[in-house]
Length: 249
Image (cartoon, rainbow, N blue to C red; front, side, top):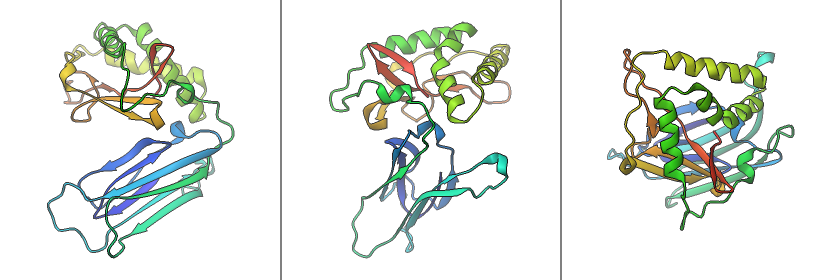
């Protein structure tokens, strides 16, 4: 998916899941793969356009365009096939916010993702029973460098991401083990203490996913800095089913 915006704040979602968001009316372009958020058959792209937090004068030519393309990397065709597109240009006397929705046909060879059949979270009266315990347990396993437990924790995500991008599951699992093994071998590996007061949750995916970050949008489960100044953060797109929380993405 590609987005290009001029002088507007915006949010772009696929099936209710935020892919791009900019509150500052920046003029720029961006792109991201979205296989893991597509479902078989009917899919939906939502674009919300509004006034941002920037104090600068709004540009005369406000616009946003969104393109979704199917690209076969093996073919060498970087343009790919256009699946759907949206274009909005500034309209006289049109008041913000502006919402645009477009349905489009997705793949027909994906399995039904686990999050599609998960419990719907009521955003007005959400039930987060067990969430803090789940996060605390994950934090302990990461702190203890418990590789088998962490691999099991992200197994669903690992398997479904492999299917979404056509990677053999065994290859993806091996890559995941190597990824965490390399991190755990670093003597500076240390998780930041949990701070429940900084926890921020957002319901997405039409109520079937819970995104957990801190108040600044940074992963809630994050390490201290490594020697090169980098950090590791575990992204958390959670689903809930039969009283249990799972990492879906």
